[in-house]
Image (tube, rainbow, N blue to C red; front, side, top):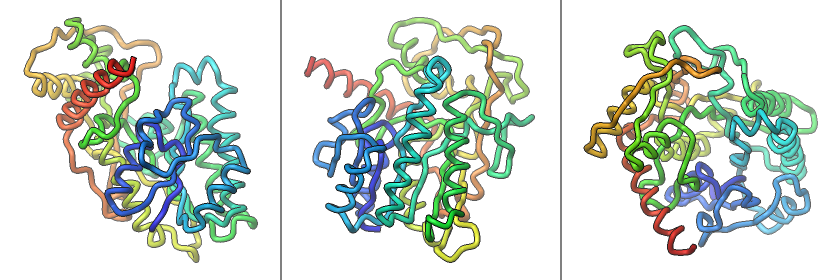
Length: 339
């Protein structure tokens, strides 16, 4: 691989992936409409601002970069509550526009695609552990867009018009942290996930509430698979490097799903403990009943990632916390300086 088109490459995950590509000697060609991504995250990189559904723009990218070897499709709307209130917007952005993108890729002869999917599509299991063979049952419009696109992509690889088209789908679990070199990170200083709430509670001297402490886990709190975003980025590089081994052009099945997580899972209480160790302060932690819609959670079996991609996570939850805090401090200072 020499050069790769990456959609959504100015966003949190996409920009970290783009940095990992550069570190591996692969040139990222970024396509992003900057509706959520940041122009600062593409400084000094090959960048096209625009919509993934714009066929003329995609054609121009391939005309100007005929040596593109694959596409990493990271662009998506990802906010679950927003997807509930604006489902048609999410289906148009995540499904409809991706179909337009695939038609452009097919027209330009791009036969390798790595798709950013989500572990949110899995049906809950009694233990929380899931592998790629577990049933899927998306329970939000956002998650359903990912589930739908997985089916679209699988069908695409089987269609007559997609000659030798192949897809590796990476199902992420819960990315945290930032690029360890602090080139990029979360754009939002007030994220809504658990780590974001912990950072907010620490910054404001407020209590942190664990919602639900009666789950069938080792300490009663819910469980998630918090994986460092740099490990997620390196999984993309691994998928590209081994692409033709995993889904070769002559393979009977040209579509493959791979989980990208830590393989262990972290309970909410364990996340709090890791956070307290990093900041050196004991938080005021309180307990409450589960919120409507709360579930036990899930974590990944990463056997397939190890065997197929030769990839394994290398960073701890504590490192993710530390990098998230370091990035937040740098990003807040940068935003303040430009305000």
